[in-house]
Image (cartoon, rainbow, N blue to C red; front, side):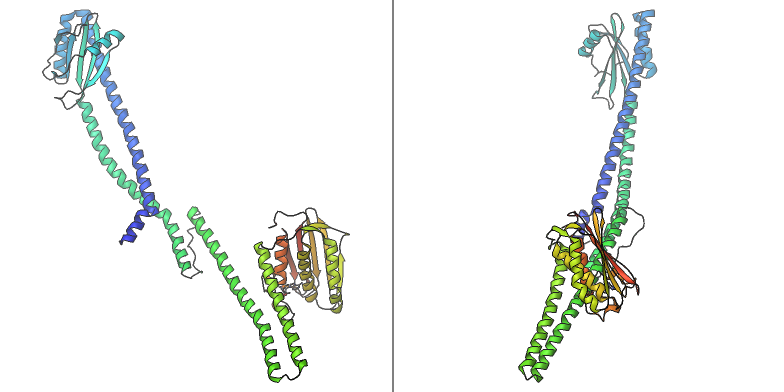
Length: 473
Ligand code: ADP
């Protein structure tokens, strides 16, 4: 592993997740063990205390029934029975002075603590203590109890069994902990790898894409988990980027093509005039032609800019109260002559007036584009009908024709910039009119939709909010 890879490993999410998992697991195991340990030691001590108290009970019965001598003998016998190294008994006066005891050879270090006796006499309750004599490996549990009016019993029991159990427990704890930590690290590593592998696949795909391959996708696992959802979102984003890149490429091709044709025409005309033209009139005709072509070009560029700015929200509608009915009547009047020339009837179904909040110049352009198309793409003898209706919070404008119609395959694409259907190529146009119409409608918080049947005609519907819409930029 190179040093770069090593440092990446230490900083990797997999490593950190494993570390966290192992740490939390170890901590939980320690807490569980500790609780268990405390529980066991408490149970053992309580049992020992109960034993000691029972013993003291027996001593007081012997004292009451048989007298002090019998108690002294009882102490010797009991110690021998249990083992003189395991247990001892001392009989004391209330002053703390010992007057009899079992074999104390192994218990020399155990003192009589005056403070314990004072506490016993004061509270009247038996007093327990745990001491660690230097000569013994294990601890000793002591009891001071009053077995008669003038006799105190000090008894002690070795906690050897207790210590052995605890030592065994510690051994088991150490071994189990090592195994558990190893297991936790293994499981943690496995789980972290599983979780992170999906993210790595996404990172790999992203790297492939920055290397120029936009067609790559993250394989979906179909598990429906967060990583799978991330992969699906990432893939959807890539689909969108790919189609946008394709659109931009097509658009720049179209722009290049649309700019090239008029420029070639201007250049051709200039060249011909230069080589063959003799009279001033010929130069004048060429100049007029060039101006006309340039105007068309400028118009095209203006429209492109207007669409981009409107879509980007840079160009916002200058809102004012607009009477749409009046605006539509003006627009229809403008196209009346062209419709008549083409042998079309132009009908309107308009209310007296219908006002909305909008930008009159923008809306004029929108309507002009729709009317221009309806007239352009309807053969002689057909009709164009313009309608306007109040739909409560919205208004609906319809421009319906009986023209050539649009094929179902083209219908979703006609609002794209520069898109022109095959059957309309013979008619002059830029393919930008509907893009601008949609951009304007959307900038007003509205929408333009199209329905069409090839050969039967088309209907374009513009819906606009009546008041200043929240969709406005
Ligand atoms: P153009 O300058 O070509 O008219 P538009 O963006 O206005 O550009 O329209 C895009 C395409 O949609 C047109 O080229 C035409 O093929 C189709 N189209 C638009 N309006 C109509 C219509 N009323 N009838 C038939 N086809 C239409």
